[in-house]
Image (cartoon, rainbow, N blue to C red; front, side, top):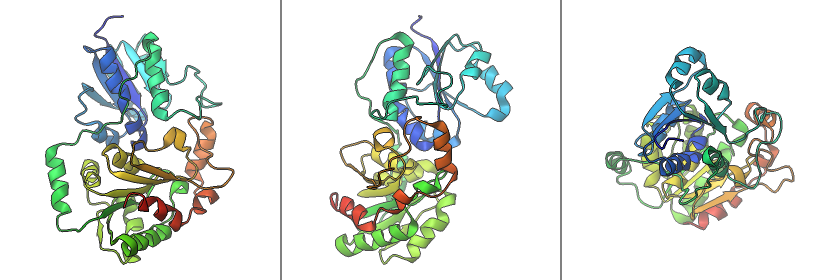
Length: 332
């Protein structure tokens, strides 16, 4: 195999999945220093998170609504790597001869595709192993590359707010059953104010405005509500300056952990072994229900769809504010 191939990596659209895959690009660059590496990303947020990544040469924004132009853009690549929803057929139509995936079985969505004991990142790295049979592991930490200007803007937004500063993200864009509950978040904010005199920063997208507004109205803590007001990378820069972040199994939780902020994740259906935030300053609160966790790394694709479309998780609802507060206390 030539040592300067053109490589395209298809990435899941979810923000968490985008972060999980960042070690893949670093590993590819180590394996093929002269390669032209392209990220095929299926969301604008994914491109934002990967922006300024030194291991990526080009971005292609994927869309199943424009298959023909997309296939045209993929022509000429030597290696196609599927770390996303099924796109092998696109690689085949584009004439990409070397095609690898995190699972070699083309019908992986019908039955288990991976181990419950490995993080998603490791499953994606195993796909890279399949290129040449060489397992390369050095530093598989997640990475986001923020610029100094972005960090300075965040610092100016937070100027004058006393510490400790706790960021809260109550949302979960596609999976309502992964949301802990705005009433419990409000109780948590009051506990943090009472015990640690903490001030609160509420973050999220436009879909989180209503959730954050409820928390703002029901807490006695000084609150800065930034939901729907910032771009994704601006929000990331805000999280970098916070002392603690609390959130569900959603994008901002992983972003905070990447940036070194202490993180308390509230996980219901998600298996933390597969999808948990990583880092020394991370704690995950999980329910004690026998059924939890029920969502694993592609153990059952259709069950994953159930979790997405049915907004009820009794295990998630069983987690109480004092449990999450105890985890927060470890960092404050």
